Every structure is written in C-alpha cells, then in structure tokens.
Length: 100
Image (cartoon, rainbow, N blue to C red; front, side, top):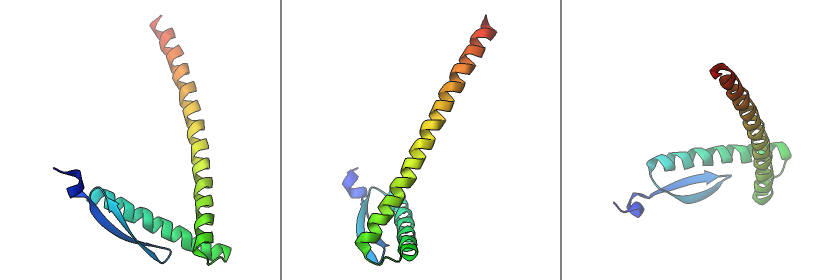
C-alpha cells in the first residue's frame, strides 16, 4: 500500500492558533493531538504566570521551559546510564567470582 495513502490530516489549536498537521496514521494523529494539547496547556500556563500575552514571546518562554526540562532529563539519563554501567561491572565481577 502507498504510505502517502495512509496519511491523516490533524487539526489542532495551540495558543489560539489553528494548525493543520500531517500524521502517518491514526495512532500518530492521536499522539500529535495529545502533544498539541500539552503544548497548548503549557503555553497558557506560561502566559498566565509570566503576564506575557504576545504569542511569540510566550512561544520562546515555553521553548526555554521545555529545553530546561530536556536538559534535566538528559542529565538524569546520563546518571542512570552511569549507574547501570557500574552495576553491570559489579555483577560481571560477582559472576566471574562465582564461576571460578
């Protein structure tokens, strides 16, 4: 089947602006709608807390908020990977000792 034939159009509203987006399938469309709703909520929250109403400024503040969140998650992921690596080495040593 032609992948373009499965494409689905999704209409979302983010910070009072309507957008038409393309999704590969219904599952992706639902994901896009959920993300758009999340971004809309976040932008309204940022606007309310900052007292800013200009959509461009709200978008930049929201992007900074999301970038900060991403940086925190990346740091957390790095820390978890280091812990997993350490535990893997510890378990490998214990396994080597048990085999000997």
